Length: 308
Image (tube, rainbow, N blue to C red; front, side, top):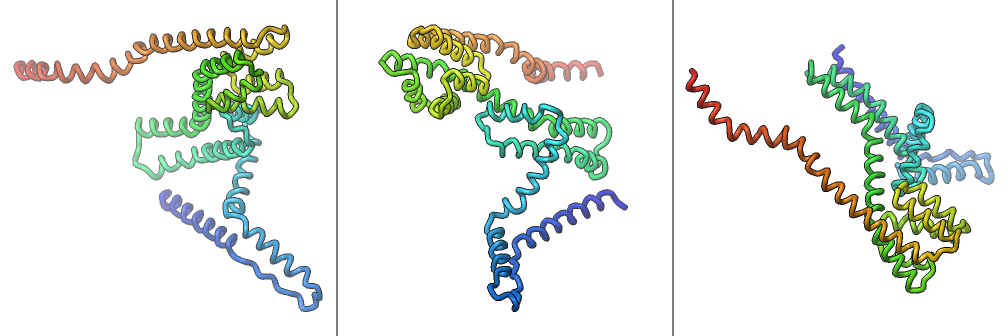
């Protein structure tokens, strides 16, 4: 039988099964009342139970079990420590909900299962061959295997970059507030309300942990472990040392603010120095060939005409 016909029949069968499942889930069930049942406890209870189930949205009735099954497969067949690493990455992204990790594991199962299906489609459903076929297979296989993890890593790095950029401004506001007479928690609360962003969200969570009964040291260490930014680690260590040795927090905050300003300026200079090197590759392989074609192309054509 033609492989394309098999793929088409499989898709049609899957669509019919989904349609039947959806219709079965949306159908109402009317129980039969037993005439001998005096109080009628069995029938109405069955009707109420079915009505309560149908009152839930279709996503919870149909997609939630599928998501749960895919999540179970992901937790079962992933390497040891992979789920914990994914959970830490989501925490660093500011999304510590367990549902986010479950959705990601379900997506990973779908992408892995899609690889052999895509290979079968390329071999039997397209006319690609040779180097082009190998390039398409390699590109899409790498995208399906590494794409979800690469996307999460990119979001984590973007959030850390935002934290590094916001930290000097928040430090300046903290210095002004503390030197004006506010305590550290009060100054931090006022600063968080004035400057929105990922760093303010982390400080808000830290304040919530302290109000819930955790010590300031434990809340600061937990925040530093969630974010994993070197500048924030230095700030946390400085605050902990100030609390331990009784140093003025205002003086420590001012020293930290000056140091972070210098670090941010150095990082900007470092990126500026790397820019010409990064521009070299597109200039050599993209811009220079076009310039050579425009400038030397007519001369080469005239030389070839003279030699004929």
